[in-house]
Image (tube, rainbow, N blue to C red; front, side, top):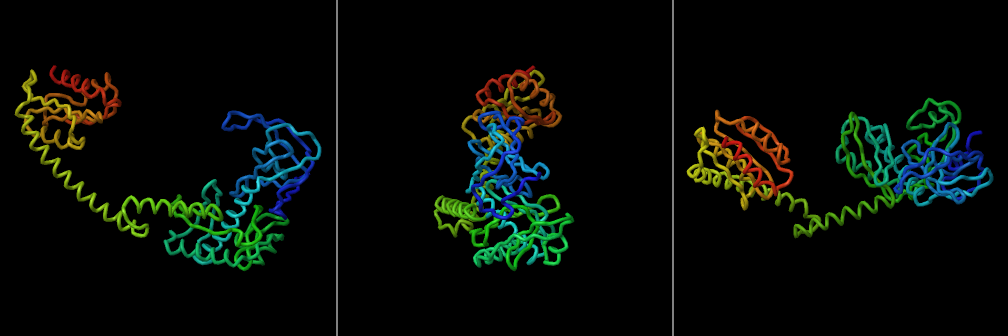
Length: 405
């Protein structure tokens, strides 16, 4: 016998009585505390909604048992609970805040999808009700900012009008004649949700009674997902929480930039431009410093047995960005090898003038075989980063030893 779904006709039913017709042990359920023993309970009727159609399942209790999950099992609904239940009458209770939140999000999704379809010709191909945000995937051209704002505005206008949301039943042909938004091929009696003068959509989910109970609909952003466009949104208390968080973040950014929240964007643009100028000036200064330092270091370089000039330096107080230009400048001098390591970060650059007598890639591998790090390069130029910066000095000593052989 199929489970009678009480939520089909009354999504606001929070407490109910039912008869336990089966209770069998199932695989343990994983939780924060580890694997938890579980039983699958079938009832003759239920107000618990199972995960289906993008909407998560309800939670709550059956007698003294906690309901951990609710699943569809053919025509039945299986309740996964944390203790064995006798085959008798049981009181059921829905986690109402969770249920009402899901009702707000799901009805809001119907309304938003209808606005995208009706106003902008963008049909919804999938829906997901997440723990923080909801998403719909739209098919068609990329929705512009004006389209996203237009759909949001149109949906909220209908929310503020507090239109009735009704449950209708009919065959596929009957619903098609009434202008259903998405036709289905299933036979028999179908359930549909009607938002007065706005939408008619086949659906087995739970919904609010009027659009005003959605509260508010907030569209967040739109991203490309394969061939479709994923729109993030939130309704009701979720929208309030997100909007408040957005403003608090914007105000904090304004405080950090010493400007009003509405001036944050222009302040960020100005700060970015100044950063780019400072970065360009820093690069130029580092290049000049590298050229001057290279001349001094080459003049004081030691010689290897094969006549190469060797510059082996542990950079302590310098900017790590000096490593690359300094090594490049040193390698411009004939018959010169540069071994440079930045002590505080463990970054290293080894370079030699083209056609030098050493294989720096092989030397780096020898160093990293003893002192852990990651990097690579070519025969004349290698870069790496030591896993432990405190080994910088030891790595330099080891590299110098291998070069001097």
